[in-house]
Amino acid sequence: MRIELPISKSIANRLLILQAIHGDELMPVSDSMPDDVRMMSEAIRLLGERREARIDLGNCGTAMRFLTTYCAQLEGQTTILDGVERMHHRPIGQLVEALREIGADIEYLDEVGFPPLRIKGCILDKHKIVTINNPQSTQFVSALLLIGANVQTNSTSPYITLTREMIEQYSLASSPYRLSPIALERDWSSAAFWYEYVALHGGEVTLPGLSRDSLQGDKVVADIFAHLGVHTTYTAEGITIASTGVADLQRSDLQGIDARSTAQRSAEEILHQDFSACPDLYPAVALTCERLGVELHATGVESLPLKESDRLHAVREHRTDHDHRMAMALLVAGYEVDDTTCISKSYPQFLDHFRRISTLKLQ
Image 1 (cartoon, rainbow, N blue to C red):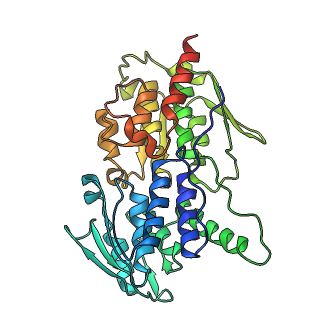
Image 2: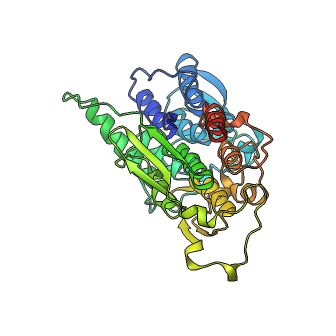
């Protein structure tokens, strides 16, 4: 089956901020795009129309972090950034302190270190070196880079590399040489759920618009699922993923799996994976391993409790907790899901695609 993935919201949201910073026309945003992208575009548009604004960002952590820095340098603009209750528990203190070091005027409206925030835009000293080591979210670093701040960090996250490369590409595309503009790639993070599907249910799925040379760090999903019985073939159009049959030897009844004890597992049935550079892949990988009876030794999971849900707890308890990635991973793994509306945050077409592939599987 051929599946058209959504655009990468990581790339789209960075591009929107770059366009806003440079005073360029924002890219067109359609209803088919992820909610987070449409929310970011609407927020930037609103900020361009009002000198005072209160913006509800829902549970979009990317928008909260990127717009905090964007609003901080909008001289004369006063903005309140708020969100749902979960957002009030997602830390932003490291970013606020870094911005204050370069002159930002930001006030916490409730608990110190967390949204909501009141931001009074002013001229920032972007030449001053500010350091964020061991960031709770690499988006703190990316947010500062996007506004041109001189930020240093010890993090080597692919998301920071993505930001740096996009800034360079945007600068070159805006130069007199007019090189090719930034391409809106399809989303490797969303591909994880089709890797999960193939690993658990078999078959073959074609995903156009994905590339081995992608800027996205989550392309590592192909390497991870190679250990779980899914082979990736790269073409000029995109990728095709297919079951190798290896996973079939390990798969138990998907309606009620009983995990085997550690003593009964072989070395091949233990997957060691560091998620520090790809935390969004954790739900799909963890639930795939659970269903296959593969023991997952996961490291680099410190940021997972700070996501749209506490993903360590949500995976363990098979809970959605209004988290888009949890909802998709649980559906593919065959669990009941009490909230599917959150899925449009990153993948509005997922439910339709999932129904289609499930129908084809039954025929």
